[in-house]
Amino acid sequence: MRSVLVLAMVAAALVLLPEPAPAAPPVSSTAGADHAIRVRDGRLVEANGSDLVLRGVNHDFIWYPDKNGSFAAIKAVGANAVRVPLGMGHMYRKTKPEEVSTIVALCRQNRLICILDAHDTTGWGQDKKATTIAEAVRFWIGLKAQLAGQEDHIIINVANEPFGVGGDWPWVQQSSDAVRALRAAGFKHTLMVDAPGWGQDEAFLMRDNAAKVKAADPTGNTVFDVHMYGEFNSPGKVNSYLTAFDRNRLPIVIGEFSGEHEWGDPDEDAIMAYAEAHDVGYLGWSWSGNEKQFSYLDLVNDFDPASRTAWGRRFLSGPNGISTDTREATIYRNGTAAAPTAPRHAPARLEVADVTSHSVRLTWKRGGSGTTYQVVAVNGASETRVLTTSRADVTLTGLRGAKEYTFAVYARGLLGTRSARSAPVYAVTPPG
Image (cartoon, rainbow, N blue to C red; front, top):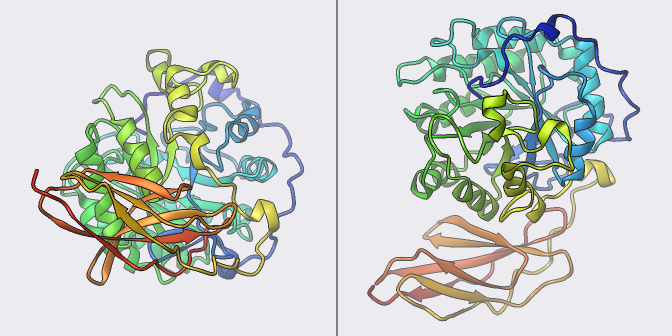
């Protein structure tokens, strides 16, 4: 996030190291790419093939390293992930290796996927205190001992919000170089690459060039991160941006967003609705501790999980919020076992009803307990995910009049694996 927190605190120079790391629950201890979170067909998956849809919160460890009870509180509200900014010693106090070990242990203890973010690159080129992506690479290499062997529950967010606004930054080359350098250094983790333009990609550098950066990763395990603040103030802007990644099978995560912002009003309803319908990960900014004038960004007041703000109530328990359909990572349930079995049969008896100029109702035969469904729009050999639901009866809206549509449905098992696709159905909408 473009910094709205206290950047200089007297306590920062005097802060104590966090309490010793608590014992962590057992997770896979086998290092290597075969046991890592990875990218498959444009989606983030676990080592056993289960879909991993990140639903979580940003927690400001670099400003509040003594608020480690927040990890348990974040888990308690239903999150499956936490994104933790780390300081590199340029803009912010440098996070020490032993602190990183504490963070990782707290994530494991509280059964959270851990996204670690090198934060000092924020707005490089416009913020004089910011540092470069190349410096972030050196920072990560210095932490390799703390991160190696934990690829099944750690994602490395290479550089937070690199570059300011504008379209002439060397984002493609420097992001590609960073991915290549980290792979050459032996990192097997999934890497997360942030958009330029203070994370909002207002010039569409990431949207239009993400495939080039992904191609620089010999493992293919790179996911892209956009921060949705004032640039994303309408459903049209949210949907068109995210659809561009979905259409091109490029994995995208909304690493930061909020309900209000000083630089425009984000459309949080559209952000969360699209993410829920299309299984896009999102992480809200932030748990607590923003400057007083920006306290509207806090999800809870003064780190008290029992005292939710308006933003906290919307994000945590509102429509399409954390409590809607968040699934804990399977490594915390049953380890990196053999790939789970997909539902044996495609959804049957898919039917069309109630066709209007702007909507259509689909129904199908319900599967077993724990099954969810992905509805897709089919266009020749390609398909686009429309929504994910636990129901077997949905109404699709926003259609155009006098147009033929083709839809199909996949069943998705408890661990996220998909069945074969159902037989397609067709709907011709009357003129509007």
